Each structure stands twice: as structure tokens, then as C-alpha cells.
Amino acid sequence: MSVIRKASNANQVVLKKEVTKKNVASQRPVSTLEELGDVNIVDPGSAQDGFLLAYDSATDTFNLISPDTYLSASVEDNDLPDDFITQLEGELNLGNIQIDNLDGGAF
Image 1 (cartoon, rainbow, N blue to C red):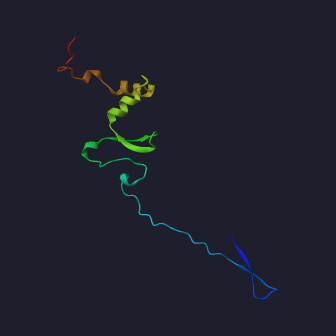
Image 2 (cartoon, rainbow, N blue to C red; image 1 turned 180 degrees about the vertical axis):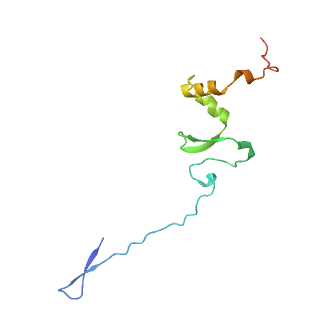
């Protein structure tokens, strides 16, 4: 926004420009997931190898979860996608599964 001030000469008006200062914060590029503000990973190590990065809407963060937890949650509604079932049926060959040492448990 410009400021108008009266010059020493009564017949002349001078337009003075305001100098706006921009604050620029120097930011270092993020090099790991832990440095992101919305990722909640505490000390990842070999114990979390193979874990999945999943979004948690309750906390608005990303967390590591085990694949078992993810698969269990995906079938909680007792419904799997038809495409997934079709792909499993096409890829599984029950003739190749060895059941020599299968333990059926106690009845």
C-alpha cells in the first residue's frame, strides 16, 4: 500500500512506496520419513522391516502397521473384493500345496 505525504513544496505531492519485507525461512530438504511432521515413527529398526505405512485419520498421522494387522482389518466386514478372489483362484494351485505335516488340532 502506498503512502502519500506532503512535500515541502505546497504545490507538489510525492508518492512514497512502502518497502515490504518478506521473511523467508531457510528449509532443509527432508531426507527421511521421520523428519515429516505428520509421520509418527519412533525409532524404526529391523523389527519394523516389512511393515506398511498407513494413514490414521483419528490422529491425522502416518504410522507403521504390521501386514497382519492390515489384512485382519481388511476382512472385518467379511467381504473381500471379487477381483482379489478371482486372482487368488487363478494363482493358487491346490495340487502344489503339500499337506503331509498338516496338524488339524484336537476335536
